[in-house]
Length: 171
Image (cartoon, rainbow, N blue to C red; front, side, top):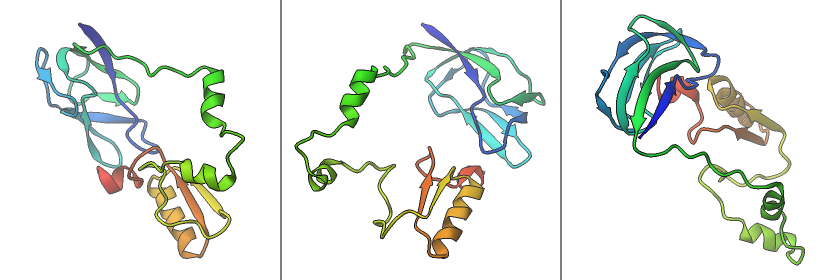
């Protein structure tokens, strides 16, 4: 059995701390991945914080009303499944993955690229990109839409499947 130290994850842009308003589990309780462990009130919203794993709560290191920071360890959870890190490709493997065979033309290379859900554009670009917005939180999301409304070709880069930030999807 492995024990993980559960830390408060990044919640949203410019949110670095909050107040624990409710602890939803108790020591010794079995939890499922995605189950709410606690609620954290920030200056923007009250956010449920889910469990990253299935397991059993071994120790709760905080109390309701406590001020905590993103990255702070708040619980220890015992889990049956070992938490393996994704293997990092060697520099040689990385180059091999990224390089297209020399015998392919540009058209052939484009035809062989499989679109993914996170990288598939809503519509094909009709020219050069005028603006790249990094971060799809409330500011980036609005900036990208405004620029597109003004006629610019915009690319929005965000790690989330649904950009828009805490306020739009979880707040």
